[in-house]
Amino acid sequence: MSHQIDIEKIRADFPILSRKVNGHPLVYFDNAATSQTPKAVIYAIVEYYEGYNANIHRGVHSLSQEATDAYEEARETIRAHFNAEKKEEIIFTSGTTHGINLVANGFASELKVGDEVIVSALEHHSNIVPWQMLCEKTGATLKVIPMTESGELNLDAYEELLSEHTKLVFVNHVSNALGTVNDIERIITKAHQKGAAVLIDGAQAAPHIKADVQALDVDFYVVSGHKMCGPTGVGVLYGKEEWLTKLPPYQGGGEMIDQVTFEKTTYAGLPHKFEAGTPNICGGIALGKAIDYLNAIGFETIAAYEHELLTYATEQLLEIEGVKIYGTSKEKTAVISFNIEGIHPYDIGTIIDKLGIAVRTGHHCAQPIMDYYKIPGTVRASFSFYNTKEEIDAFIQAVKRAKVMLS
Ligand SMILES: Cc1ncc(COP(=O)(O)O)c(C=O)c1O
Image (tube, rainbow, N blue to C red; front, top):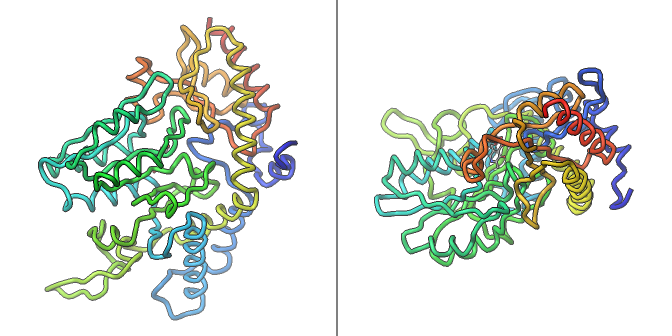
């Protein structure tokens, strides 16, 4: 196989890929919702619980020390992966949603009536709702970068929205519903020229694109572990040290304090100020292993192979009469959102599941995109580096069968 992907070896790393669903070999094309887990990550979880499960940071005993060292090593792996300048800028969260809420909560003390914040039309609900709540609290105004028919952002319109009132811009790196890769370099540069901070939702980019937060000069970058071969319930917020120092803590509790008296509490330094309570220790360690696993394959190799899958699947799908693909941006990750004329996406998803094929149907937590296209939802097939062209063939056959049954 080209691009040096040893697909047999890679697939052997993912035990779940050899199971059957409804009597058929599993074809897992729901990777944008959650990725599958390689043995290296599964074993890290088992090793943790079998070998050194203990609470971290505050124990003098050996087990606690081992767990702390492994957790902090994972933080260093994550720092190096995203090229953050300092380990203190890496905050463990429970996922992208948590990271965004943490920042939105912090900005409550930064915004006032008359201030403006900018979102895009391509966002997942978790990069919309927390900011609406923030605007309700502060009286700031939410502005929206419009999208185009091809599922791209109109960045000329974005530049018109920017003004000296703009305080914050929050946009995803990659759209979960359409796969569009946004020009975040331009978005960040233009926001900074107006003095606004930028949060990038990297949930969908993280499994495909290695973001360099220093090169991007981004203020905040958030990801979820479970979309990048890690476990659920763990994620990362990168924040520039100056911002994280300035923003107030999100939650109060153990771990995030320096001194507590009934008169006054002082907070711990970074990153602990934002990590109240016992964290997902095992999840953090396992996420470090997932990142090592992805880097061992290499992000360029992953991107090239997934692009091949995307091109192959797009061509095959477009040969089926009545298929319309939503999201035709030139820069796309391996996501195909589509409908077949006259057929509800849910019905296609249900029928092809009977043939072992897992896709997502619905609005993909991106209702404004569906409203733009005036559709209730789409069928979304999202590919990963462990998928194959043979699986795409099975998927195409299944879609054809569903079409015959539903027409
Ligand atoms: C672009 C994007 N942002 C945010 C999220 C929310 O991630 P999580 O549910 O892991 O917090 C998702 C999940 O699908 C997503 O695709």
